Length: 125
Image (cartoon, rainbow, N blue to C red; front, side, top):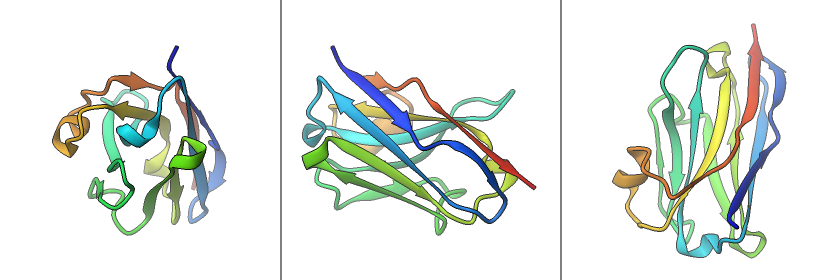
């Protein structure tokens, strides 16, 4: 059974940092494009960042560029999202996603094979 388990969320003041982790089991992430999405209260789920299977290519939403960094450690079957300079508008539940189809366009559209349960990030002003 495939599981994606996010961790690292929490409460942080504006300007602070958090590092989210997504640990995969039952799935070899080496063969997957991985991504992070978020859903703020009352909002639709939105794409945040994605990374190719080898960790070389990345893709970011405009809101994440320059502040967030996605990375992966295939040996640990884990993907990370380093979030710096956090803003109150970053408050959301953050979800990890994995897609065996290795296309950014597909993953960015939210068409993932697997999703995690999410981790709450709250940024206070």
